Image (cartoon, rainbow, N blue to C red; front, top):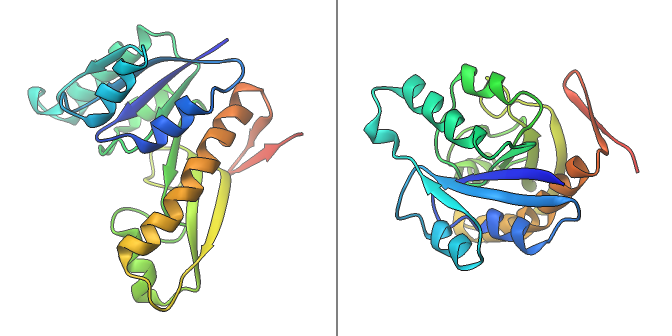
Length: 198
């Protein structure tokens, strides 16, 4: 059984999708947030999942918070740490500690549109397709080895909310599958590539 720790900052819809998928061989050991009032914590507690919160504002800088966060995460002996709407840029030390076992989902087709405001930027640039990317996290923001991607069309009438909603449907499908592939040992990292065996 592989222990999974999920980090959230809000409602955690991707966390919910992963939990609802009931992935064989996976156990959600904890859901942790940097906000005590994050909606996703209540959702997880209602389903018997252990929760915890650690307020980044209580720490003197990013390094101190990340060190405390890693110490908390490690009490759950994680095989995989999942970022599911965790709105913090992580330090290289934290990322290195969980090398090849820290996964994120980003609402664009990386390497395009890293960072924030991805949907607005995609529409402004006139792209015809957008999507989401599951990737392993590295010290460079939104540049880790890509596990999986899903593509959606961008319609002429789209605003950022409409495009975000269409992409979110794919996120909820793609992320649980990527986690299941990790848990089943189907993923191999080769440089910047992730190879998947059936």
